[in-house]
Length: 290
Image (tube, rainbow, N blue to C red; front, top):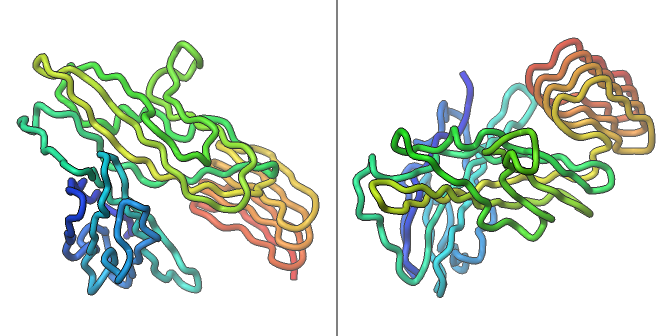
């Protein structure tokens, strides 16, 4: 049985308020043997005297004295052991905070609302660069009344990203609803976010839905991307191939060749020491090394 996070409801809080989400692991499917931890909270939360923490399974938080309305989030990591490996899964708890926070006075079927977005892994190349679509058809994750047309935009994004936008027919053959980001000069593994907003008119009134999408940026990959076929790296320590739908990949290096991703078929690493293939749905993999 798979282990994964379920959607945690969005929280709306006023500056200075404290709150608690009871039994946070109730939002995790198959939580036996799973331990939750809270990643470092952003500036919108009070962290002195551990005001924002997980205690006895409850997520406690306190909002700082923010002066402007904003969207923010807390990141939760679940960890567990499978065999000799430690597995992790992340989720975010979205917050709308400000000096005053209004709850929309509309019926549920009269609103726009985003479904849950899993954090997205983005692998940059060995120069610290990436440019492309990281999420497709995000409008399918939007809960809205039938027959309502919406416009989706990127409202803001972390300064770590060079740009983030929703692609349309005007600038790509991919069509609407695809989140495109570009990155350059990334050093180290960094967390980032992109905030997307859907706007539509329901019963003559403009409605908006906001979602914060968490990004895990991984630096230093020799080859990174989606649908990687027949890739080979040969070189200094740390050469690797990472992504999704990897077929026929080979790394040769000393030490630490690595292939990491989802849907790995026919992968081979040759190196000494630390040869490794890691991922999901691995078929016909071979490692050679001491």
